[in-house]
Image (cartoon, rainbow, N blue to C red; front, side):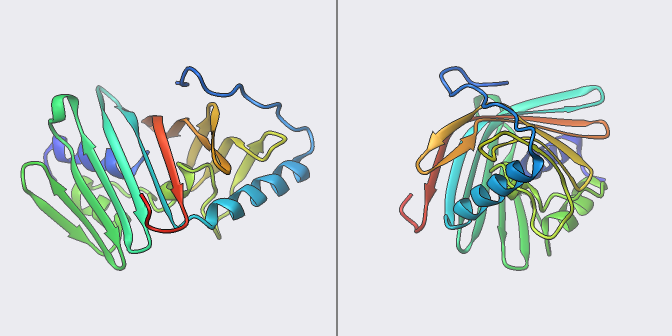
Length: 209
């Protein structure tokens, strides 16, 4: 079992309220079929953007322990890079995902590698957590091919999503041409809670960011 600092860094990198100045919350739809159809249409639009990035702040709450830090998550065709740092740049590290590799390099220079993020989590933290859905959940999407329970507004923006044992709730969305993106995300499972407050989103169909 690795040190608590390393475990927290990995959990924060893998697992991901409300901002002022963003749009108000749309009305929840009473017609589930309409909401789900709009939700699927939104997911299709987002799927056309192979490159995306967001920066923000997140807070991890575990029994007897709370940690917060800055997060930068960049996705490109070759893979994803997640940078995490604590107050004053301390702690955290870089998580690189791509192909059949998941690599964590801490700020202290330690390296941990596995075939995928789930296996890396088991290696470092000794906990079996389904983290592969995060790249979808942070964008307000469901992980493809896995059952989920959805509560969405009339525009298809999710308000609550339950999948892989996680309950994900969303605050306000902000327009990031041409799709509104979540600016506040709250994830809960068992005794773990992760709160994400996004400062900026970028979407692109090609490597222009």
